[in-house]
Length: 238
Image 1 (cartoon, rainbow, N blue to C red):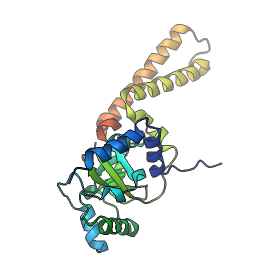
Image 2: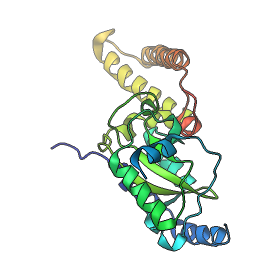
Image 3: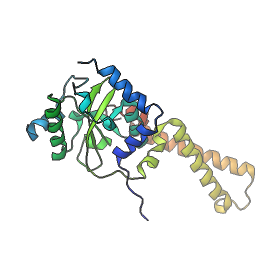
Image 4: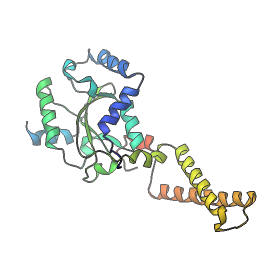
């Protein structure tokens, strides 16, 4: 049976609902912000344009609270799946018609021009076209964002597992240690020696660990890789 692909919007909503502060976050959002003060081509230009705007003056009574997310919830999603949360001006893919229609509808409903769009997507989508599940946001101010539209295919269910080692140095070391243990176990069963001893196993394990660590270090430096918590909102390659 094939594993079901991951819908990033549903996963983001799960992270929001599983947070013990989910409802207080929405209440805080209204408390903090209640005192704050087309055409397809035009909207696409606005989405991909650069603007020094930290919030849009939405009419909050018209917003769907299920689509309001705090930056910490967005960060959790990006770190788990090694995604980027960047200005839409860096996005190299096509903005679909459905997204522009939703933006146009929101602008008419709230009588505003939405600025400073953000997108969640794999880092490669900020350089070349692909079909992996981008999410389009608009800033509401005070580190809150409003989800406007999701498009593309759902993400692979294996991506979170695949990107797990990139979450922290501890995760990476655990992966290296696990691989070392498994490889040492296989080798100690007779590939290099028919009479395994504790000393031989430890020596083999040490050299395997050192070799794996050297390979990972070399590949990390050669490809300028960094851990997900440090790149999720970085506009630089790594």
